[in-house]
Image (cartoon, rainbow, N blue to C red; front, side, top):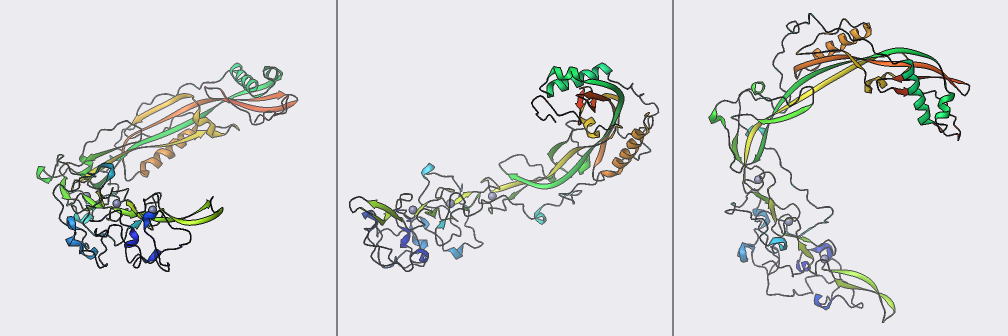
Length: 490
Ligand SMILES: [Zn+2]
Ligand SMILES: [Zn+2]
Ligand SMILES: [Zn+2]
């Protein structure tokens, strides 16, 4: 039986930390080395195992150990036996950690394991945790109408643009809202009051020479589309319903009805394609339900990373009796001198539950249809003052015109020709831009945003400012920066 009290040094071919060490190794139970007795012996010549009647950890090459097959509990198969040949899955195979948090001293894993314990830094586990992999596509069933996977499916041909009904009557354009002189002045005065330490006094000294009222136009086009893709997916099989080809041929991807969660909103839905399911053995664990532990590689224990398997560490300390610094060997407190520790990943079992089948051993495969609803939005801003155009996008205004249909026609009746032209260009652009998607609905609108521009005089300085949007936002890039305290405002 492998025994954790057996020091790893006993392993005869662990040359990496035994070469060139002097002889004379005292028993470990003495609690470390006397200072006058330095160094390590080659393990072959010194240190007897504390319990020689116990076979200890098997090392197939080392004489004196029973052949692995004779060991109690079946022992370990020789490494070369494991290649390609998984042992038959034990009935009701992996039982988790029967020893509870204490784990076990005997690894359950019977496959291929390395000769030596693996050294593992717990902060940086040696083996990458296994991830679920996809089985080769050629192993998947052939399903009519589902030859193209993992790419957008070409949508059915759309109704031609001429077939879409061109509106004969369109809503008229709403009146242009304006800001009154008083509203614009108030907006600027409160802006000055908030932004200058003179406060209201500064605002009173401000002289508004002139106010010019204009309007900005914001055209927005939205095209709401649907994109469909299919792929093979799998999930652990635990007896859930399996709707396979015996129930009939699979419906074609674009003929499967999927409800739209919300119009003009990006969203996604995944549905199982009917009659495509089947149950297959798990390809990642060969139906065993468990896999070799990636941390200890099946050994159930790892080399102690504090003492690197030595079981003891070299420590310097000050000896008060001898009144000098001395260095000596001390038993490793982390592994209690064993040189190895139980694997923290598998709790000593040497194997972990297969993450692909969650220990079930078989998988349900089916074609999954992914439906993407995408809202494509483009806009155009017509603004003819020095106010930066993009400021218009995020303030409220009046919706002067709004239209929604399966396919829409460009606006041609707006008083400002720049908006009509923007509508023509964007509608044209959207009509050919989404070849891999099916257009479900379109809508467009024009908003009119009031803009007031004014020339002001304050402290013998002229500057212009803008008040825009129903929120009466102020844009005053030339606003005089001097204040009572000389602070900078903008
Ligand atoms: Zn392990
Ligand atoms: Zn240790
Ligand atoms: Zn599996």
